[in-house]
Image (cartoon, helix red, strand yellow):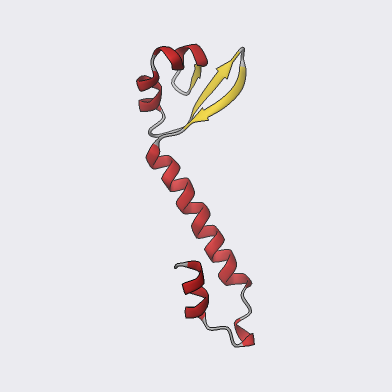
Length: 81
């Protein structure tokens, strides 16, 4: 099994090995030399979700016009930050 690429057959034969390889970096799942999916570990997935949520929150705060009397605490509460 290549370090970061496996076939669907290899995934079926050794799912726990594929999952352990995906803990640190995405593993490419191929079928007939075409990428079909990416397998990522729990911690990596959670980091991605956290990054997306933080990005969206920062964007919302940047786009809020506080000159119009909007209170930062009110905006933060709506964003759950």
